[in-house]
Amino acid sequence: MIMVQITRLQGTARVINYAGLVRGATQRMVKLEITGSQSDELIKYLDDILSGLRYQDTIVEPTVCIMFDLNNLKFHNDHFGHNFGDKYIKDAAVIIKKVFQKYGKIYRIGGDEFCILIDSRVWCPVDRLLLDMQDMQDAYNEKTQVVHMQIAYGYAWFDENQDQDLEHTRNRADKRMYENKDKQKANDSWIKTRRV
Image 1 (spheres, rainbow, N blue to C red):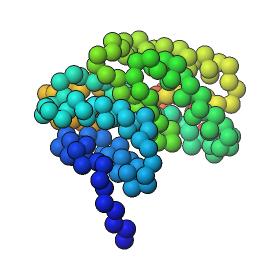
Image 2: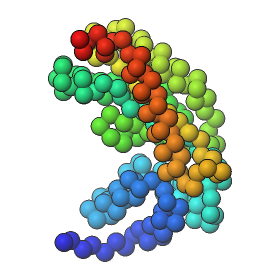
Image 3: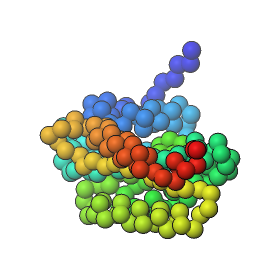
Image 4: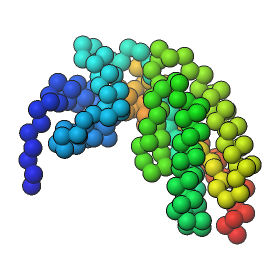
């Protein structure tokens, strides 16, 4: 068993535990503290959010959380090789970045999962941007013969009436993303023709 004394996180750790924010990021902050690594962009962004919470019990400004997941990555890896799967992830990330970069912070939170947090002080036409992303995805698929991109998404605005913290907002966005993913897969003629 390894025991490590955490010194620099005391104030922030209390706020995170009190507010119940982003368990994965909290664990990452502890890992960074233990390993002695410097904070990265996500940690700085969360610190900025937490700074605004230190003297208040709730999040005053609503925030939007958008979750993304790439459909059929396993199919691409299994049938075309991991190089094509990697290309799929990179190309999807480029599209997501092109569409959303000026509105919020974009994070890769899993192998083929991405998350965007947008501060409420930034005007963001989410529905229009998702249509723009779909148009870019369609154009990409017309040009590409092997990789067929399909980005599932879901989003939620922080709502103080139903969200205790940003983790609840993220969970609602994640649920909507999986509903969208199921709908996309049910209507995906490209993948159906290749599984025969």
